[in-house]
Length: 180
Image (cartoon, helix red, strand yellow):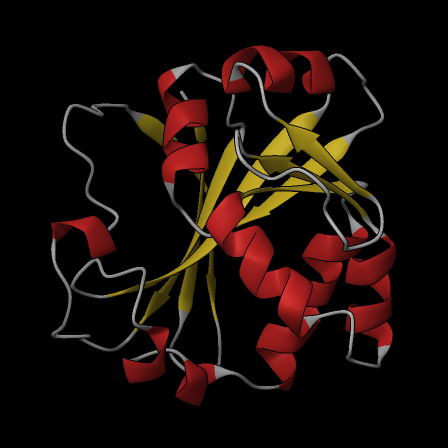
């Protein structure tokens, strides 16, 4: 079976949004290299409509190894309203998300990378379809947002197994968890 990995940035107080307040000072060559390796280890990306719209505006106009790779990579977007995606190599998953992802996972050669931790990742966790959750824990309290901006999700009680811990020079710690 294929593997689905969600890689997401999170502040110490659990915020996954408002990254302008806590994330960008921690981007460096080391974090860029890890992000590139994650993308290189994947044959596709999966995202929700919100992430897709941000990425589809940002990446097609950029140059460099990461930009070239993300633009060339197959992209699956969970959306019931997106009709004619303009970003190259995009397929819209407009039916039942769990069913669509189950079909994707049947391809043993397909490793799928997700960025962020929103409704798509939460749905996959609920259905036992997310194989790995990588949290990039930043040494920063965001101090902003509401419950909707946090990694916390009501009624999602799932035990995960710690797979790996990696400390970056910036103080960011990558915690990798798998389904237990």
